[in-house]
Image (cartoon, rainbow, N blue to C red):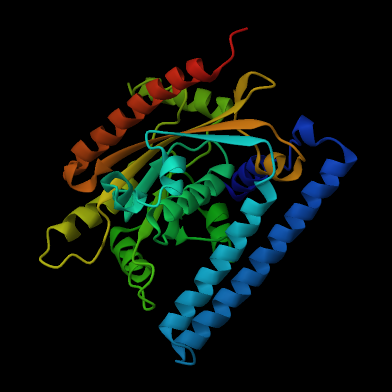
Length: 348
């Protein structure tokens, strides 16, 4: 993928061009530009702060505990502001598989074994929109309230483990295509750094990975479907075919660690998510652009999230079998998404 293609994908996913019809008013354009300016300012400031903190840490001018706390504060400010921008909009989130909203309001829920299984997990999901990242943070806050235990969240994509956007992330978006692979040794080293907590709190981690890599849309799905037919791969109507390398590396590292006498990594479970966006006014399923949700005064959306849990030690350990497991999981996801769409859609 060329730099031009990478730029185009980012611009399209944000909703800058082509500009969605819902944003084609003077007020919405101004709001969209303001949001993009604020995002650019944050990326610049965040990158500078990360650079300064790294220098201070390397020259022993700050402690690892202070460095950890400072970066966590930046993460919290960014994501809380994003949630604030959407919390009054007409967005209904339905969570299936676990009744997290009820558990969140139940003081005894933190002792529920099902809730405890949500701690220290690898999270995989289909990828419909850049807003998926916001959904992940929203789920994180819901689980934190239900368990009364803070989660250290990292995204694993674009050849990077990250929590907030910075220059390094933007560079990787431009540099790597959908076939990127984080070398196993480098990934293990980075995971150890992320889960070694000098402040000793939180000792609860999520690593979130989108195996499809690219965001689903009809054009990409059609192109990939034609390619899959050539290689006799399963037909998927609601998903893109998953990429195996990074998922394999991530799971293999954790499985090998669990076999040691003193495992370092705390991860125990795999949280498997299905995300679906439904516009009841249009009676259609959509892949909303980020600016559509953030800039519109009242975007009307129903977001359906299905949660399934798998113990990591139950996943296949051999690479080919693990790939087959993920492929089969994606086929089941595709069928489930089709069923959910039939249940959600209003009969015409």
